[in-house]
Length: 251
Image 1 (cartoon, rainbow, N blue to C red):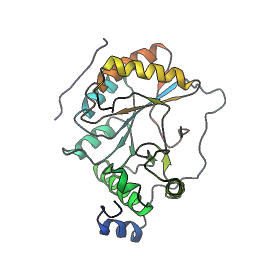
Image 2 (cartoon, rainbow, N blue to C red):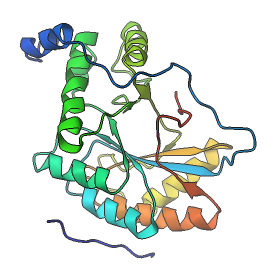
Image 3 (cartoon, one colour):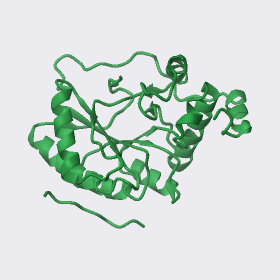
């Protein structure tokens, strides 16, 4: 179905009213969450990297999966409903290869989802149902579009959303290293690699949560991931997927 790709070193009312009403009338939530955020056990290694990919799936998802599979590494994909192709097949491919699927947003339209809480959760419910229908999995991880501290979401709403996410059983995660692969200019794999290495140095001690994207725009991301995996494995790092037991990195 998909080709194998391997790399080697080298407005307040834009949402339909019925969606908002549906989110109010039909209660829905993820699996119960205790509200206790886990922490690293004493003596546990902090030389850990969590590779995360936002805004997919897309045509670049399969090349990414092939790179990760080559090294036996599992990652975390915070997915959307934006792809115009066979989203369900790509979500299935992510799940079948043992990666974690988290929720990001369905439409990724800041003005809509950050207008009021009902609009936010109507959008979230759509991507939640998309993942469940495609994979049979109930996602409990979430990443805010733009991160949990962004200029699009007013402070009063931000506080509401964080509280309501926890009440519904979701755990949100940010990041502490950016690759820069979603800028207006497509960076080379080497440039992305250098961004990550520099960001890792600035992050200091502790686990690294690296932000990548797997949109159609990010054609060089798979090769950059290949480069950084080899580099950080040599540095003694372990690559892990985020799970509901992973201590969140938050802004």
